[in-house]
Image 1 (tube, rainbow, N blue to C red):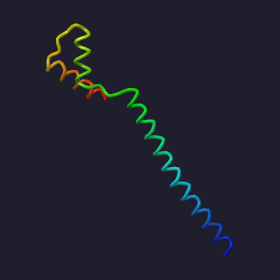
Image 2: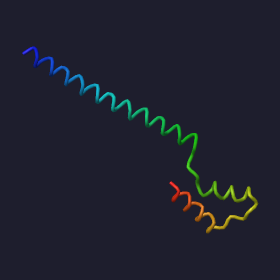
Image 3: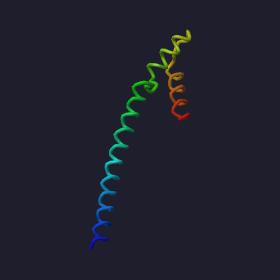
Image 4: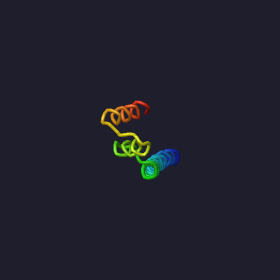
Length: 75
């Protein structure tokens, strides 16, 4: 009886710790991901237009679409 109780406790505690570890891993990974998005937001068409204007070029819709497509394909 003592051996069965010990094995049951070990398995029960292991499962509880595994579940707690999963939740903690999910929480910290989510926080890191949100921090990365805040620090490095994804590039939008508005940003691409601003880059073209800063370079002294008039942004056409086809240029904007080409840049966005190339960014999407590079990922």
